[in-house]
Image 1: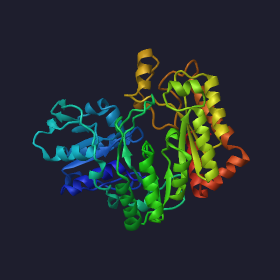
Image 2 (image 1 turned 135 degrees about the horizontal axis):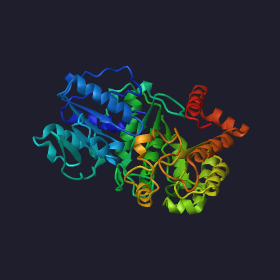
Image 3 (image 1 turned 120 degrees about the vertical axis):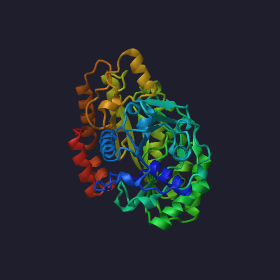
Image 4 (image 1 turned 45 degrees about the vertical axis):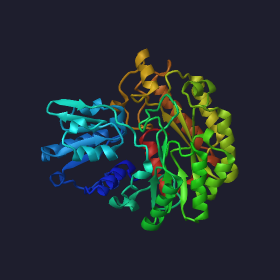
Length: 431
């Protein structure tokens, strides 16, 4: 999906009169960057692209020693010390980038910019935390014109071009595995602003499907309903999906009916586990009965559901993991994921592992995704990492290798997408 963080920063800078280019190597691997053309080059870094980004930074630094090179993104916000020691990097942004990067580019004393670790010679200066942007409506729409939107894809989808959209930032909930990279204060765009962007995507870019990636789209149900009502009344021809998930305790039948009428065909739901005790320990904030209820509503409305589960919490046992696998089969979502647990820094989970001596290695050094490799970052009860990985593989095989589930896959994915996903699953040894 398009890199909305980078594209929002680009739009903000352009509105301030600063010319920008955006290169997304995931869809333009052949793109060449000429560092001498730019005053500054920025990278958005996550756990999956860390190594490739650092390689590119070293290459650009060698080619243009005087270039300003800065980094931001989820991993920088979670583990800034992973980048502050790198002499090839001039600044590490641990905040929302729009206003901070504009300040960094325009002030005389960069070390005074809040939310940024700034290199000055051999030292790194941090002037303190930066307040979150409160008025999201004040930000311009992401600069999608700077990337080739026809190259983006998503699994699954109903139509292309397909792009992503974020209508709110932040999360007030206390899940122990979440680093809250956008803060714990929920900040939402108005319904009018969101619908205005959707109209622009449809009218100017010909977008036919939108993947809404909010952490908490429906926290304010009246706002969520207002967005749906405007799409319905305006007869905006768009398909919607919520691949990042919607919290089941913020969904009811009324809102689901409106989402369906507005074009929603696909929703992720994330109970994470199927054991009530573990569910309480990870602080999800709802019970399994609520998950069952939402799944029942979605089935009746014809909304495809994607169940998210996590396996490998340090306090889990074979039996609690088996309960999760059994609960997944009971829900019977059209798609299911069994993700390995990754303890990110700045989470309660990470702090607990560190305090109890059960952290084996920093996750960002070894983890590439929730799917690849074994659970080797921490101890999972008395279970060896290889057994946890085999339980994940077994869960996938038992779930999908049934005639009815194979039929669900064929209904949900195109044959081309299904082939690509199968190849990925085989490469990552998940089946």
